[in-house]
Amino acid sequence: VVRSQLQFTEYWQGRTGLSIGLREVLYSETSAFQRVEVFETDILGRALALDGAVMFTEFDEFVYHEMIAHPALSLLHDARRVLIIGGGDGGAAREALRHPDIETLDLVDIDEMVAEVARRFFPNVSSSLSDPRLALHIQDGRAFVEEAKGDYDLIVVDSTDPFGVAEALFSRGFYESCRRLLAPKGILVAQSESPFDPSQRDVVEKVSRSFREIFPIAATYLAFIPTYATGMWSFTLASKRLHPLRDYDGEGAGKRLKGFGLKYYNPEIHRAAFALPTFVRHLISDPGDEGYA
Ligand code: AG3
Image 1 (cartoon, rainbow, N blue to C red):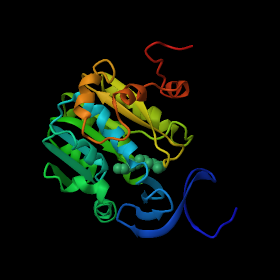
Image 2 (cartoon, rainbow, N blue to C red):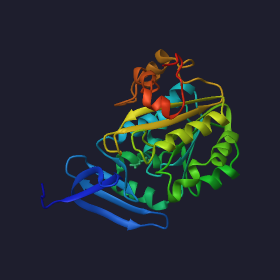
Image 3 (tube, helix red, strand yellow):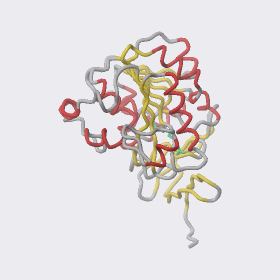
Image 4 (spheres, helix red, strand yellow):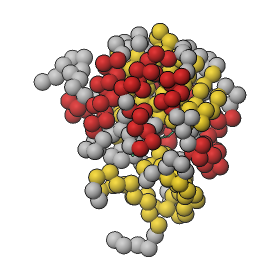
């Protein structure tokens, strides 16, 4: 059906992808690092795209931002110092800063334009950028972790896809620097692409392998994000001491989360998110706790 209308398509393989009907292009500029676009969509609210990839829409950003922050923060339950690499839009920081124990949050994004655009077009996502506990560093994330001093309770890698500007944020050396910065029971969480997308699958595997080689505990978990390629998205968590299921106190977490106003994450989702479909287990060579045929 050909209709005369504005559409944005993120291609995930060949000519197959996700198309979003648009009312208007609100912003389209190229920064020193990437193409930055903001759209007013037909039914998904506003959307931010970097280099042609959807970063979030107002419709479902809560899933990604809650799921990159709350599983680890609920497991830690008393995190004080947080570092976020990427995520200059402020969404992951907004979720982290709901935890009242957090005293300082360093947010490191290489591209000032992302924070500017978020402040201008996405006030609900970027609200955290003016929180007094947050320090925004416009800097290369890799250089930051190499120079910074510990002890962070949590490091979150909220990067774009592993091409161009974000490539260094998927390297083993970068993860090793992160480990050095973590407190003795610290946790590292990274977004790790879609297990369904043939061109990204190796990322799921690679991040899982690196984390398992560097940390005693590592686990992949999933969330459902309709506006990302294929809709199924993975995150990988690495931990120095706490196991994401065995050390998780669901009752305590449930009490602490009351009043946060979350729309996706809850203690049942925490447990469910770490249950992996068989094809994802195979992908990361994980036999699971029970093993499988
Ligand atoms: N971080 C980007 C996740 C990767 C999306 N990839 C894609 N659509 N191909 C989102 C930043 C939000 N704070």
